[in-house]
Length: 227
Image 1: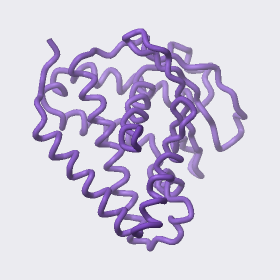
Image 2: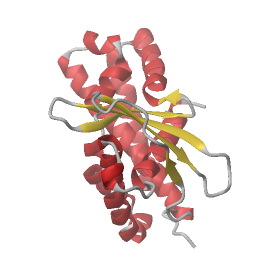
Image 3: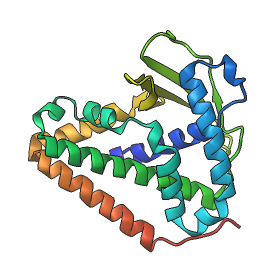
Image 4: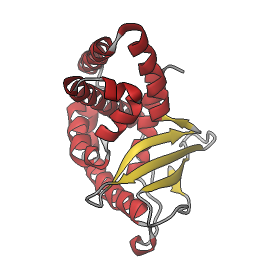
């Protein structure tokens, strides 16, 4: 499976998990899970109300994801960890460009995966279940464990979400692990190879090109509505 294909799968499962939380009383949840539950309820309601509009116009999904989900993800921290040592080797301008292009790449896959799903399916409240929290409540790191239950009866997919609490006390997602494979680690391996062979500027150009092609694909693709 390529990095791009894997990224698409991870982002889609992440999307579902943010949407559909099991019904547990908010007061009983640790802060990271409570945050995600409240977010999921709000986002799910918004996307259900706009399902028809999304099926007709992909830009609606992009807008809703930017407004509702992006604020819950720490893209700067993800970018630093994805680049690893190459982050400190990059200039401030390169760091800024990478964070922007990588964020755009993730969001575009996020949107595309959701749009493709909605063309043939409706959201199902039983598609995800969350497992009991394991961790120290006084730590600034937390892992929220979940399980995606595919609507076609396929084997469940184990998905873990790593969150970090910043100095302001805000919890944000910085990594997603699908069936034991980390999003950060996967991209780090791919990007490290490109940088070692061609340099940081080549990676930035490659990301920009991928984002451009995704835009062209979305514009040219058929907008098939669910029958």
